Image 1: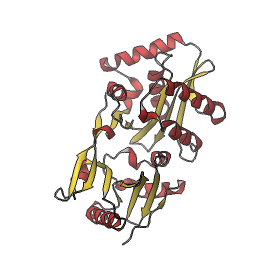
Image 2 (image 1 turned 90 degrees about the horizontal axis):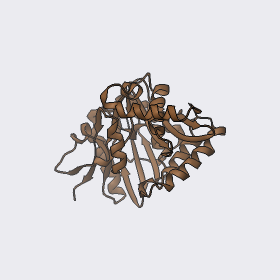
Image 3 (image 1 turned 90 degrees about the vertical axis):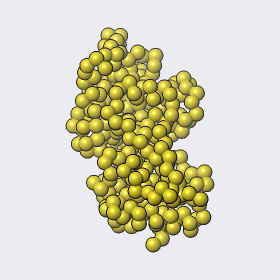
Length: 296
């Protein structure tokens, strides 16, 4: 069987939905369609659905990087990998699979494949109640920052996103935020956020904004994937406003996530400051992901 790939479109959400209940638990944000669609600016994301299994790959810098297959029956995992191998051979490229979770990594023949833990891509999972209530000693500093914000900025407003009122202000905040960091990994993020704002209705994104007076000081872009899980894709705040990050985080969880069990806030991308911030909210799980390459 030859895999016929085509470029990903908004209509492909139905393919992700079809396989959703068959995904390994827990699964990472790479199987959350809105995020895959938003991130389709790094290269060209392509998809192939053959009825009982589906394949996703990224064409980037002359490489073909595959996601783990989506399957209705995990017993067909080896068959799916063989199809991916055949496709790579036809294209005369080595098979490279990223974002493989531990349950899937165990299914590979280690005599044929080299498997590497990519710790920078591990997803951080949080208990929703922790993010909403910030209860106990472990969140004492978070509550203090929130109190300082409320005491300092009486004229704050927290609400859902309105494209006409807020899009321009979000992009202006990004310009200021970008100027405060020199980390090269943020270079493409403005494009991702702009894409999320452009398609927020079609993707059913949940976006919150925080203002002090007429100044936008924080925003958060999220997706609720059902009763089990929510995702936070992007969260930014103006650090001139003490407590803005803590407020946007807590109020977003309270507004959008109260009917979910866990929140996936994605990886730290091997950025020390981001790792410290994510750990400070006491994740209940880090979902490790692996890179799998065919041995030469």
